[in-house]
Amino acid sequence: MAQQFEDRFHRQFYYLRLSVTDVCNFRCQYCLPDGYRPEPGKPTGFLGLDEIRRVVEGFAMCGTNKVRITGGEPSMRRDFTEIIETVASTPGIRDVATTTNGYRLKKQVSAWREAGLTKLNVSIDSLDPKMFHLITGENRFHDVMAGIDAAFASGFEQVKVNTVLLKNRNSHDFRQFLAWIKDKPIQLRFIELMQTGQMDRFFAQYHQSGVSLRNQLLAEGWQLAQRRLNDGPAEVYQHPDYLGEIGLILPYDDGFCESCNRLRVSAKGKLHLCLFGEAGVELRDLLANDASQDALIARIRESLQSKKKTHFLHQGNSGMTPHLASIGG
Image (cartoon, rainbow, N blue to C red; front, side):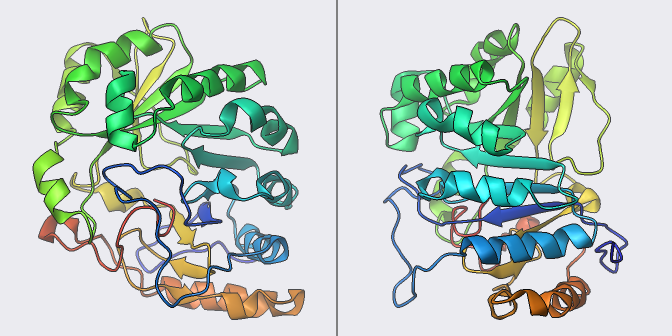
C-alpha cells in the first residue's frame, strides 16, 4: 500500500465521499427547492464505471477503507447497483455506504445489499407526513418508511436516518423522534443547517444551533460514544434505555474540522478538499486508463497540501458550494 493520504495538519483520510450524480428528484427546501437544474453550458456526463473503479482504487491504495456513494440522489443512476459492486470489489475497501432519499429503497435495497452495500443512510426530515411533504416537495413519507422496513428485512442491522434541523419546521419534534428510535436500531442524526451560496435567506430564517440538543441529551443521561477512524462527522450518543442512537453534526462547533478524515470526489471527477471550499481539483483526465494511477495518486497527494485547517462558515463564507447536491453533501 502506498503512503496514507495526509495533509499538512497531520489529518489522515480514510473516508471518500464519491458523488455519482448531481441529479435529484426531490425538491428539499434547504437544497434544491426549485428542483434539479443542470449547470448551464456544462455537459452532464458523470463518471462511468471504469472511472469510478480507478478513483476508488487510487484512494484505497493510500489507506482509504470507506466509500460513501452520494448524489444528488445516487439511485437515479440506472447502473447504481453496478456502482456498488464496483466499489465493494475494490481491495482494501471495507465499508460501502450510501445516502439516499429513500425513493427507490423499498424495491431495490435488497439488491444493493447483495451487491455489497454495508451501511445505509436515509434522509427523513420529519415524522409528520404533511411536514415531510412540505420540506421535501414530495408526498412520499410512507414509501420511505416502508423502505427502511425493507432495509431491516434485507439484513441491515442498523439504519442511519439524516434529519436536517430546521427552526419552526421540525425542531419541536425531538420527543417524537426519540420515541421512534427507542426500540429500533436506528441512528438518528440531526444535521445543523449549513449556509450555502444559493440559500442565504433560507439559512437566516431556519437555522437553529444543535448545541441545545446536545445539552438536552447530556442532561437526560445520553453518553458520547467513542469515535472510530473512518467514522463520519457525527457525535454519536447512546442511552441504556434506547436501542437507537442519536448523532449530532454541528459544523459551527469549535474544533469541528480537527477530526476531518474525508475527501470528496464530484460526479464529474473533481477532488474537493472540503464541502465548503474551492472550485475543485480536476482528476478526470487521469481516470481514462489504468496507466495513470501513479499520477492520480500524486495529484491527490499534492492537492492535500493546500487543504485548509478549517472551513469558513463562521464568517458566512461557504466557498464555491452553491447547494449541497452539487458535490454530494
